[in-house]
Image (cartoon, rainbow, N blue to C red; front, side, top):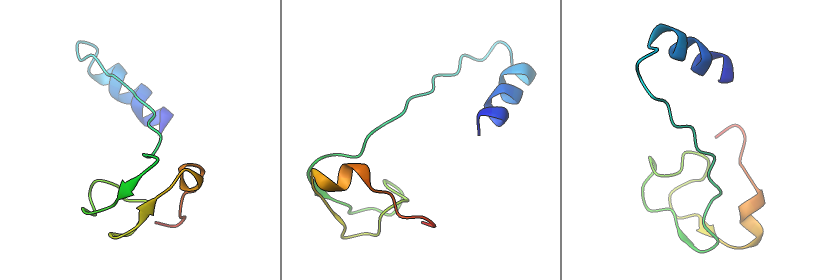
Amino acid sequence: MQRDLVEIAKVLPDVKLTIAEMSPPSSGRVTDALSDPNHPVGFTYTVQSQGTTRWPP
């Protein structure tokens, strides 16, 4: 992915790219599949789930 972003930056030098890494929330529930592609709809976040990712999604 980093390589792709570098190539995009080369092709579009006038476009500002902002790259942010996000941690999942510590509470709540996945209600929309597009909001968190790593967890199924209905997944409940906990403090312990912050360090987990399902692979493959």
